[in-house]
Length: 480
Ligand code: SAM
Image 1 (cartoon, protein in one colour):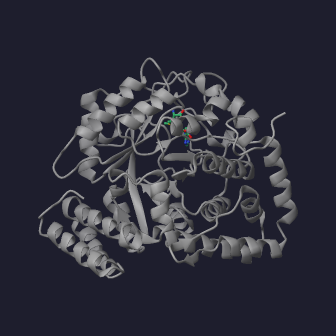
Image 2 (cartoon, rainbow, N blue to C red):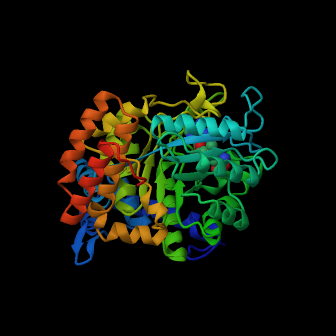
């Protein structure tokens, strides 16, 4: 029988079913133990240190107690703490990105995904390199600098060579002032050799959602195709790291299984990566299942209502303070606004989830992966963020300067974000405002930037950033 061991390389050991069941029992027993809950909140609070700010985070057991807690005052305290942690490490910056769907050919049988192999009425499409170029230009015309590329699993139609060719095309398109500076990749679990090829192609984060950590459910939800292999899928991040990718992104598709089970599994996965590779996940995504072509989300009876979804986000933020958190346009404007307060640091904008969707005038539905709730333009999303006091950031400097993996984490822990990420965010926002924004958005943005410049503590950095911004405003542009 498998025994819980975060350092083991076997999925059944590091995502250990018995350990999750015991964790859930422990959390249930302690959900009204206010003394314990207070001590956990205290442990998780950001503390000033000589080298910056430190946050202890929480173990999967500890965080599961917070998630189970039903005391309204303690929940309100958790939400305040989640926001405090987010501000301590990420400030008020929100990183912007867009998904780019390359191909919806897929040989898997995932029962929640319209790309499943048996779906005969979804139009199958794979972008040619000319079409990739056209999509990238359309995305650049919106102002995007960071993409997440998406593809189904199909070794014949979308082999690794196809993905690499697309990456090459994506990075090579230079159009007006645009260039995609970071392409994250969300493709099916693969081999160490193929991960190494992705690394050599210059990808940003490798993202792979676990879908569910519950092995038996996983096997039922993925009845056919290579994705059926739970162990191969769950151990993928270890292979990715072995292949040299040091930024990996985890995620659960909420709605498939009981959320408390998924929450404990997700944190155990993060603990495993930290224990084995010395660095936790770069990001965690929190997708919820959506209606799509022949998929009815109500068929899955573990749907997570908005208040619980918010609690999950806040508890993840508290447990893994240094991990970026992503919310997509699967969620509405209202849910996204709330989630930003609870720990989300990256959002997509103006997304099209269909293959070739960005070059179409109207939002196409025939090849769409799921319905998009937030259908606003990027300009509207950017203005909305700024009106709430956030700085939409198009910065990719860390990646280009090699600050990935543990080097990014140490920047985060050193509390130098205000002297480093904050000015970079302001400069890339200024570029967006000058190059792509509407008059209204530009006005709101310039006022915000002028206010935010004063927050840079180091005088030299502040003066330099102000100079760069004024250069961009007068269109003396540099490549940041
Ligand atoms: N094919 C890749 C794989 O197997 O991991 C990933 C690409 S897939 C385009 C990205 C993610 O979309 C999946 O991992 C899944 O979590 C999510 N997804 C699939 N169907 C969905 C639905 N109906 N609603 C919301 N998200 C969905």
